[in-house]
Image (cartoon, rainbow, N blue to C red):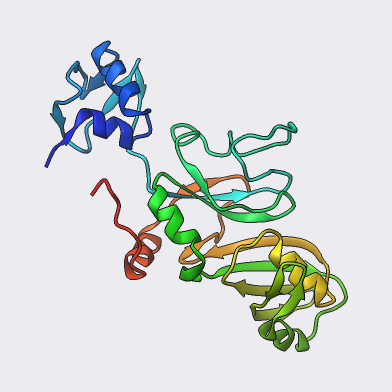
Length: 238
């Protein structure tokens, strides 16, 4: 199986079709150590590609990142706040987009992807993809909170509910199936337990686990299998 060189470069995040063709024609692209000026030539999908001597390996479809607090979930911020532009290290940085958002005060699991169709699939409300959070809250939550959140809590944006999985001291483990802005914070606050700290620990089949704060990793085999089992769009690269 082979793939056109221009398509391979696009899939690896090098640039648009016009941009990658220009790079190839200028002789700036090497494939397996050889300069190739034919953008419509066919190469192996796992070929080693360098541009101006810099390696451009295949991109993972999904990357998990442990977001710290104090960072806004955009690729740029006009107010000068810390954003996602430098969240991922080379060679991933700037070549993958975030899947949804976490507010600046919330830490935890944030996904990045190279596949727009997969991102839309993960975010679409009809999928009801579960998101699990650990919330440190005020006012000593009790078992009564389980029924309150299961029934739904009135907020300014509507009634939202969730499944309380565990309560230990001031920590509530809560799963929701919507991702509206600051929804979990508003739910808990309106239920009488304002949030002190909030961390997302799971998004569908993707798990934060022991990933260190500020670090990232590729999705593992179990996480990729979850996508297949749930009928997610196939990887367009095959």
